Image (cartoon, rainbow, N blue to C red; front, side, top):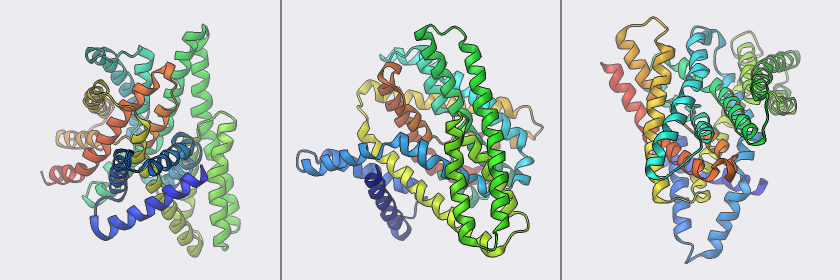
Length: 413
């Protein structure tokens, strides 16, 4: 896996260079487009260059997308994302972020699962209801990594920016818990497990509550240690990385939500380091280090998304099913936004503008593909993976590239 990761990192760096010098698209989106083109060309050239094709196959399979993302990269990406969010500003949007990341994910999961269950059989794709709900759970979390920079450049309001950032940080963890709960329920039905409701409730308490508490504890310990050596920038960096990686592993060992733990730890540590009194030199070094890690790992992630097309086995039914799923996911996203958002006081114009941007800016990404890859054939894994990939592809390429223009057009009105 290390060799595959090394080569993918090299490819990500080269594609970033090409984009910076000549293409000038949003970095992560451009990286994924170039990776997708590369994968298609290599697959098409199999008859002419079989050895190159076999090497490419080994590279993609050896990278082990699911393990690399969920067990290695996710902790660093979430920690880096949370580190630069001002917790005091986030508090102003705490209720909207909470509702979008919890109730919104549940609403979207149920709507997507139900519609997929009833509509896809019309085009020859039959999914059991629990499998359709699994698809709803894995596709509901948003991944706006590629769009946040565009929103900032487009002059979107700070309030909306915080809604998108806050939701994206927390709903990854919530989405994984919902997905795990549905998977547990589905497997329990097959094995006659009676107290399944109790197990799901315990899973929620253990994963969500436990993850949040553990994250706060990790953040507190990390800050106390880093603060005591704040004049040593190198040691501060080592400690921050160690707690991000080690804390995620500790959460996994005790069956707590690693994503939620890293978000809470990152928010706490970032608030203490970047928004309170701290050694300036160490602050700058920490900021630079985590910016580089965030940019580099995002590049790797989007290269892997592009190359993942090689893992799929498409047919006409699955392509049509994916296109139908795109419409279902967007509709469910809109409903899951307007229902929680309707609880807050706002002007009608702001309501329409914000709900539209949140709907179209709710990009899907690597976490959805990683969860789809974890499903076995008995859980309709191949079908769900193909449909998920089509939705993610549309989300990043179409929504990601057009969200900036949408924001600008709505802001002008």
